[in-house]
Image (tube, rainbow, N blue to C red):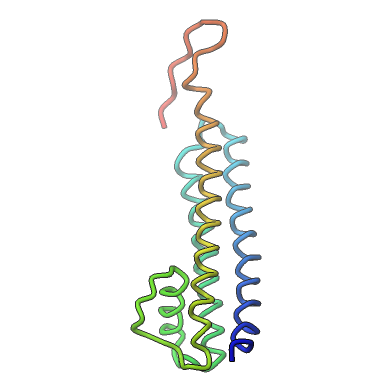
Length: 155
């Protein structure tokens, strides 16, 4: 029974890793590209866009786990499978909906996957915030020649 759960859970986790890396990469790339193209404008809007891209990736991963659960005939409705998947992926673990005994191990496997993927999202957001701080640091530091820095532009 454990091997059968691993046979379905590990490939689902691998797909999530590929999706997460892809969405995180494109989010960071989008933000860095935008901050280079318009350094004075690299504020909250590109950060929000990057967050929405990563959130879309998370929703896609949750939906893929839910589709797996429906495909295994654990849930009749996709909505119920998405609810169960979201609770597991976010590691909330309400316990109000449980899978049948043969597939019960998929819940904790999805939870482990979710913790890793959400951790990667947090790491990608930290990279973006570090880039944001780096790009704004120059506006805060006085010039090396002792002249007064020009006044900072609005947000």
